[in-house]
Amino acid sequence: MTVTNEVLKNIYERRSVRAYADKSVPEEIIQEIIKAGFHAPNGANTQGLRFAVVTNKAKLKAYAEKGRVMSLAAFRAMNEQRPSEVGERMVKQLSNPDNDIFHGAPAIVFIFTTPNCLTPVEDASLAAENMMLAARSLGLGSCWIGFAKSLAHDPEFVKDLSIPADHQLAASIILGYPKKEEMKPSVRDEPKVLGWLR
Ligand SMILES: Cc1cc2nc3c(=O)[nH]c(=O)nc-3n(C[C@H](O)[C@H](O)[C@H](O)COP(=O)(O)O)c2cc1C
Image (cartoon, rainbow, N blue to C red; front, top):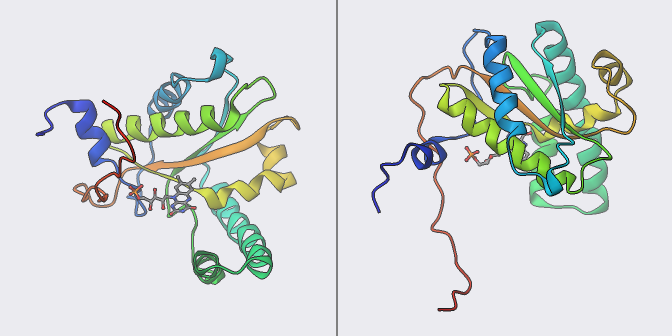
């Protein structure tokens, strides 16, 4: 099937971007992307997600380094208990002090779930994908940063962003203008459909 539809084109052209131009993202664009995230389906329409944004360069640098160090400790502990090839790869990657886990992005949006969410993991993941697709449609790159999750345990992060104690950090999405405007979309294998009863 040839894709002519803009929505499908956007889905297929999105990719995780890990190199950003030194150019800030206008606040109204970040607001729009958050709005797109909040418009995602959510269990029982509780609309329980909350968002926090960091565009401050010094804070981005500090949080990226904290996230790297805390994730390294977590992966080391996990790997000791249950060694795995991917775990070892993560430890190696995170051991590099030059590894900026935010990839030099000028903005990061954190998605929090609240006790009000009926289906917190699903709600946050759907919001995250809406945001990444919205970003792509606006000429921005994005990437989900799982390594940022450990920041939830950092008292400075919690205080800086006024995060209530009952909110859980569920997803962290970096945003920015890609360094190279034309980026190859990511490649996927053919999906495997297990069954199809007709
Ligand atoms: C839950 C989750 C956590 C991720 N964490 C990271 C991360 O910490 N750093 C990173 O560079 N990419 C991260 N990614 C991006 C994946 O590596 C990426 O989606 C995958 O390699 C497929 O590539 P694509 O997004 O370009 O299609 C994460 C993706 C997901 C869904």
